[in-house]
Length: 354
Image 1 (cartoon, rainbow, N blue to C red):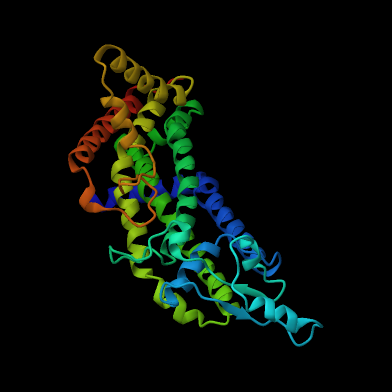
Image 2 (image 1 turned 180 degrees about the horizontal axis):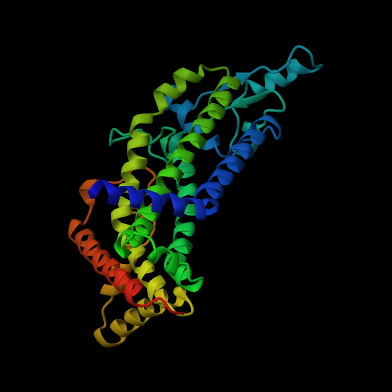
């Protein structure tokens, strides 16, 4: 019985993925390809790089012991007239008045990164983590794909149960041996598990392409790419942070996703208004009559955001801080998610006319 139920849910997930593959597969994949192509063109064609510039400055500064260093790169210096004069200029330390010239690959150039204190960064890492490594940069790329995922999830959940009633396809699904609980839970699992797993795989491929481009840049600096990356990259920690970060985010986002499903099941005209208006009304009534902001705080904590105290939902630069999790608030959100899901199932079972 359990095996048959799991098979039905897996079949429902396949159906959801086929119907929404543009939002959950093609959109993040196209974005990842565009980002990779933009970075490649910035290195090979435009001869300028802005995405890796500051990060590689930190990497090379770490390699040099945290002190500003000057790396002179020779590019066809013997074939151009006046190359010796250019090399004399290149051997001088670069000034901060022309920071863009440090990343011009179209000529002989000097790489002279400023000290970490001049860039407003800590000169040492007191936490022992690789804050000055490539991990934060790769997390930024990962967060860009997650942002696309969040937008797609909101649109998907608002129409998940509403569209079935609008086009009358709910009659077809009721003719199959599929319960309402299995149908609703499959949509919730698609939003919190299946779709994020696809985005994480695409994100890993994008990060691998980014590392290859970083190796190309380090090689053009006449350094050893593998040695630099091995000393400034923690791939296992990066993968654990990204997967664990989404698992924690899924727990925080569960009440929001369940609420959107409930609005989709209850709406007769606009699921968006059905989801937003009651929340805004509750916030205003509490603010006017009770002079408090409990609802606003609760809603804000269960929406995607990036916070400095590592309680961000969905977006992390250095991975989630599990010790700082408010487990009571998280548990209350899960209870609300269970109630909202139960109401969505009840509405789907007894109300399908539009």
